[in-house]
Amino acid sequence: MEPIQLFVPTFRIDETLEEIRLCLEKGWTGMGFKTVELEEAWKNYTGLPNAHFLNSATAALHLAVLLLKEHGNWQDGDEIITTPMTFVSTNHAILYEKLTPVFADIDNMLCIDPESLQQRITPKTRAVMYVGLGGNTGQLRKIAQICKQHGLKLILDASHMSGTRWADSGNHIGNETDVSIFSFQAVKNMPSGDSGMICFKETELDAEARKWSWLGINKDTYSRTASQGAYKWYYDVEYPGFKYNGNSIMAAIGLVSLKYLEQDNAYRRQICEWYDLFLKDASNITRVPTSADCIPSRHLYQVEIENRDEVMLALNQAGIYPGVHYRDNTLYQMFAYANGTCPRSMQANDRIISLPLHLRLTYEQTKYISESLIQVVKRNS
Ligand SMILES: *Cc1c(COP(=O)(O)O)cnc(C)c1O
Image (cartoon, rainbow, N blue to C red):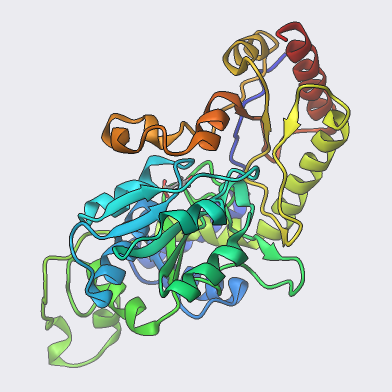
């Protein structure tokens, strides 16, 4: 039997190659052309007012923190309240800008718990970094309310949330934040290869982000090429920005992924429904709930179990390769100062497991994975 992997990106190969061919024929593989098309398509799809395409969500997270810090006049050492249950990029972004990550504990959906957040607010708190783990909104609306009450900026690491919508309005998530960041990395639910999108609420910050992502140059090559006259080569540089821009090859891949995102997320939800069905009566398997207020992208399907590491190894024996999202970040050396401050996250750290979830999974495989899990958990408890 073929091993069942955690993630397998699916690309519509012919259609994607056709988009890439357009770049090659035009002789334009860099920023501009398809990156502009993807930015427009993304704004159209999400209803968000601004979108700037970057080489990764990691770069986007950095620019989000950098620009909010600059415009809010934050000082080094000011605090951003964040989650310990995330990929390293989230909290790196805070440190890149010499701010202090303060960890709030998580709820049963593995997202920041509003009560814990409130306990962490100090006069130095400037923002909240929220991660919609697996595409779930968790208690994002409550968090947004708290931010408003306390005058805090809200940064949404929406790396898993491409296509997540509010259940009541049907609107795409992202409008309730100051900035939302999406990842189109290879194994995310809207794959390109490596790229991301930064969506600022304020158009002024979007314009600033475009300069910062292009070395601080105030006019990009594409608009210079498109403009006429002797001064089209002329540009100014205001500060040492970064080379964070996305390119047309990645955008070409992303454009096709976006076209199928609704359909793909619907199938992800179908797989999760099958898992729910097969696992609902299983003892000692706690399914991580999703918030009823959203229609999630379903980047992940997570459960909590005892003896997680033994169970993982036993599943590997059955040809199933699950993952763990994530290790509690306060266990990293660099965040040792926060170790022990988030007991619920620490508990999740030892118990969570992400079951395989990708578009090639079948009903039978989902059933096989569930039955194997039930058996292995029974044996290990
Ligand atoms: C993948 C991921 C990132 C980083 O995304 P890249 O596009 O690979 O830089 C950031 N945050 C979370 C929660 C992620 O899962």
